Length: 93
Ligand SMILES: [Zn+2]
Image (cartoon, rainbow, N blue to C red):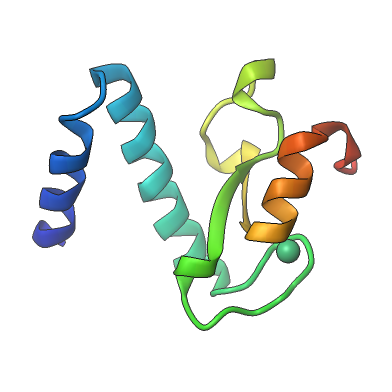
């Protein structure tokens, strides 16, 4: 755990504090959701060998007032993530 924390910090030093907090929040939420739901896409159910094939996606994008929280985030594969990132309105309401 301490090791992970260290690499977070070296990454966030390069960006602004606000961005750094956001990045850290996403990393933590992603780890939390994967631990809870396993290594699979919560949209298409594809299973992955580990978390590297998966991304944290926002249901309501940050640009539309969504936030990085459990209620607004899902774990998705790269394909689903990219699809909804471009057209967030495709998500079931
Ligand atoms: Zn998927």
